[in-house]
Length: 284
Ligand SMILES: [Zn+2]
Image (cartoon, rainbow, N blue to C red; front, top):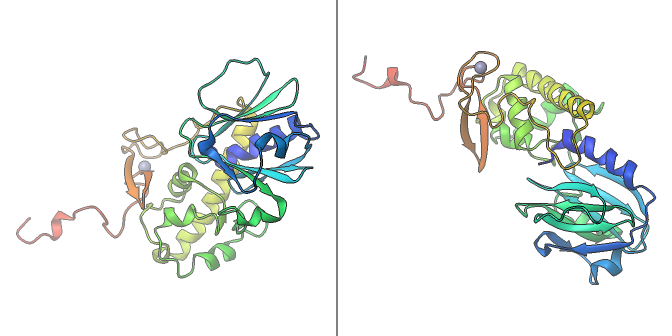
């Protein structure tokens, strides 16, 4: 579920609800998601710690604790949080629970792709993907010059580049599709093939799509466990009319990810994956 615009809403809500709270209970309901980087019982490692702060770091949610270990959650595709009373209806997808007396924080994950790290502070950098995070695309450092510099000599398909969190903080599958639609760039184009104009369009699209989406989600204030995506223009809209030109949205595989795009607004100038019949000898 969560990408940057989602986490930029969820993390401040968690911070408001939980900062300063004492962890009174901790329990694992689905050990598949646990990544324990220290020996010991989960409850012994966490109970008695106070939550000092909750921060987003790229796609991670970092719970800074007063005790010996920190808690870092990477919700990946389907992870979500619920802040509920302990007696609230039990759900099958609950993987991990922190108890704060009158309220619980549940981490739910129905596809079990997320990861819950219990990690001594000095080992945070050992969490895969945690140490090296790319430029903050909504910060002052993300200039057109910066994007031009980091795209140089990158031969990957542009969608794959956009999702590389060591280059950009940050985008996942859904918002990479939205950004490419806004920039009018086909997801399979190689980064080295982008013109200077296209890089400029990409820069504008990254900033505007992520800012606008963050604003929409913050304004509508969805429940913590619900993903708000009805504002997207192409993602998961295969066959529906493009909001700009009416052409049916297509889907394609890009390096193991699915990509949704408008074939007219995001033309594939090199003809990749499309047969140009006019060039076949003997055909008129
Ligand atoms: Zn279109």
